[in-house]
Image 1 (cartoon, rainbow, N blue to C red):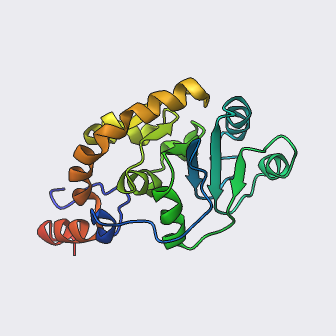
Image 2: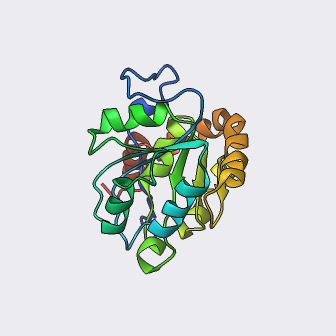
Length: 199
């Protein structure tokens, strides 16, 4: 039907403000690469074993996590002696979670590839780009719809220093990609639904 459309997740327009800057000191180390994952971690969505192995192998990267952790294996790991390069910031309100992104160097999307993630479209991706973070991600289905942002994410089945460095090299492409973010805002989405007479 002509008034049907597929709409992925979107972000608030204020995240597109080029003057948006971090306002909270979250004790980020400046002498290492800082990677972040902001969101819930549970075993049906996140490749926890890949994440743990990546943290262990990329010792010169500091990993920051914020959000509810449902995975017992990941809870056990981040409280162990083997996670010295990990900071868990707890469950943060959205503004502090975005502040964390602003202070890091890359965003992580270490998702499993399964029936659940095949139907998922993570708003986290657009938040990372808004915070000017290149994204290290597994090969999930939603990436097929992100051609405008293909220069801003690196796809890999591993997290290690080589993959992290490859991702960091994409940082220079973020400004161009941010131009396309306006099509993924609530305001743009509402205007399009009005034009299509959906609402």
